[in-house]
Length: 564
Image (cartoon, rainbow, N blue to C red; front, side, top):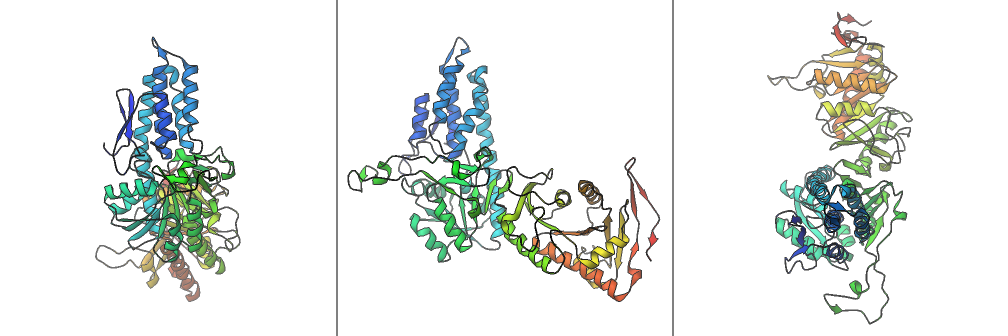
């Protein structure tokens, strides 16, 4: 079989029987609803995305079985679909996929099949996108070194339809030459890590070592783990994560040792209708899975057993949940660094009270400080993830994003910035306010200071410009209008310096990382202080002012004016 673990062939679902791995790669052909349900219940097919798509194929089979002379018995098909959805209760993907294809049942088996095949193709694309976002995040959190990754259970192409989620992220990292070794939890009691993950990593040529589950915390304590990558079976509205039993313990250990704990899953694994992990029904499985393995009994006869298939990791222990949309929960991934810098700038008086905001790009999303929070007391949990495309927050987050979100997203949409800082340092804010106009964009010129090198790019001849033109935007009451002005200016001026100001409203800077964005803010403030202290007022002129005629959106260039 190819990279896909699920194939539709002449009325039947064909897959690998995961119960037989790694000793035998046996093809499993499922042609009846009962066979699909049994395969899901007995873990011949397992992994949240995979059982979801398998369940959808089960509905295809049910629809065909209950069609006579071209007429579908919808009631009988829906009854079979309900049994399929109930085969495993914890993973949200199974019920989600069955619901999605049920809408096509009245149109016939071909329509259900078309929707299921679309879902199958979509899953591979989604997994690769989520895996790439997760790999990007891991490299931001653990830069400049080959990574030692720890993983639990199985999250590769066997658990999905193709490529994988957490293992997919490892594949991306490996392609980048960023993996030193993967530590694979055996994953008791059915050894999905030992039997399946080790097999998939070997297949992909990724270096790995197998360990017992109870050794993971010691591996972290002894410096053998840089980050933890796992999948999920359900993510609740508040960011709690249900995953294979043993995940919660890993999260506690990772949190204790300050190691990033990242969950990679498709959007279909998120359950916005379930408030917290306390509402999750945790599947209890057969005692025989614990009392022995492979037909060999290890425990005394009639020993009572506690065998939950999953546990629930609280959101506060999760560094980030990453889907195809980017980081959607646990903005702690970038939030700790944002909070550290915010507290530093607060101590300088540059982010007084709740003023100012900081963000970091996370793929197609950005993590930004929450609204109305003291910048001197921020923690990594006080961040909000927003979509860069439309500035809207990802749903079901505890905080609201900063009011200036549109300023940040305008910068991200028009530049390659990875981080943005918006602050209120006194000298730069004063200078911009004096030079600004209430209804037009102005350019504030600063000339002949060495510090300008920190804010401008070299000329083609290798020299640095000696002049910085700082755009000063009007402080519209509607902040979205400020963002629109900024976006229009940066599109028209792609080589503009990575700094701007808003009259009476502070300055905004950006860079390739959070430290660079902060450094540029410091540099601009130092320039403005130099001008103020030296009295070189000639350094400040409004040069080539741009006034936007709001009535018809025409751009009118006016004569330069000189500041007092």
